[in-house]
Length: 104
Image 1: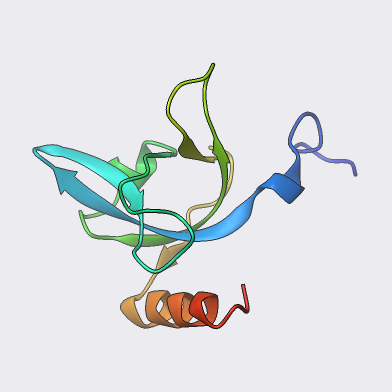
Image 2: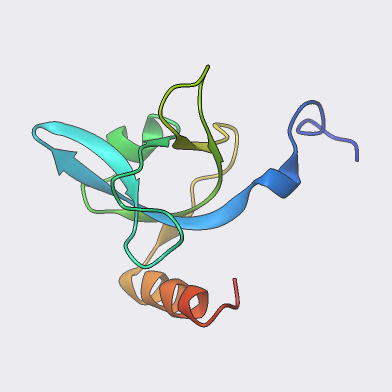
């Protein structure tokens, strides 16, 4: 594989995840939406644009991988160079329904 993302980025480790921004006691954070393989309390590390450029409650479709940093707590990592994909309520519902049916 060639291109800007080929060095050191194992694309097979990434999966599609629907996430949403939320207000965590005054700080806007991003979490996985309920109904997927990842618990909604799992932290998501993503580009600042997800919390600065969109209103709280916005849903996104991301490619993320489960990782940890030097044995710390696990979190979902979203590559900062990926485009931001906003999901409408209908798109998010469809994605989650397909996940539950095992199609994702």
